[in-house]
Image (tube, rainbow, N blue to C red; front, side):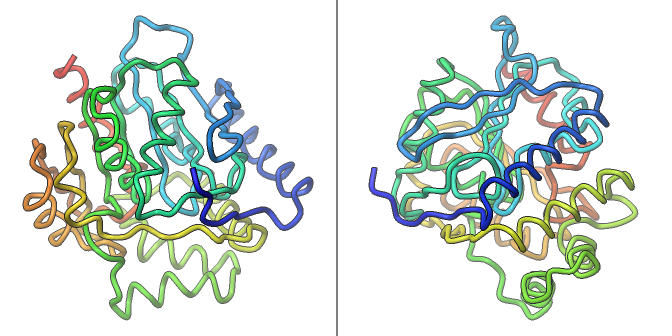
Length: 302
């Protein structure tokens, strides 16, 4: 696999230590210990967190996170409990994002992310599983659904970053650039309030919101991000061969939901259902009713 770019923490020892401490704070608050896997892939070391991973009798769900996030966002406020269905859950830390995986990334427009996802399955000894991806993670799910559809029982896309270009509206650009140009916690919180959540319907607890603000300020300030950003896969989507479920929030500034739905219906031949959540922002992976939906669908698809 050809490496396109490499991202990295500015101070590898100090910044990785900070992130490790951040994870421990989340574990303590959630009163659980995440299983921890370090596997070697074509992109170098890939970190994977897990819950119930030793119980092979359970259904398996593999999660791919969005850009400038960690897969552990999905478990803010014990959010994975909202699946209401006990499963083996693997939370993959995509290479090139601010996490403990190494920083190498392939060309985003190739199918290499799908090949990498298949390597993750192989190294974790997962024969077949349900997959879910938020934003950037949705793009990885679709690449995987082209390369190795036989390993995917169904794919759940949450405000994915592959169904249209990133919105260039003034409002979206303003709130996204604000914390990048001036990464204060105040500006990070403003971005989260305007683009990621939709209070009071879609929000986190005070503890989890602080954890998220701390992470984002850390990621922007301490991580040299050279990874390519999601793009509209367009005709590539026609090659996806797995049952796909699309979950969108009507307050998503980054990828406005109507266009995502329109393009999904036009391009994904295996699209089974679309779910729209009112007053929900881009960070739909933290929304309890979206998790309820995924868990219920998996129970019915077993």
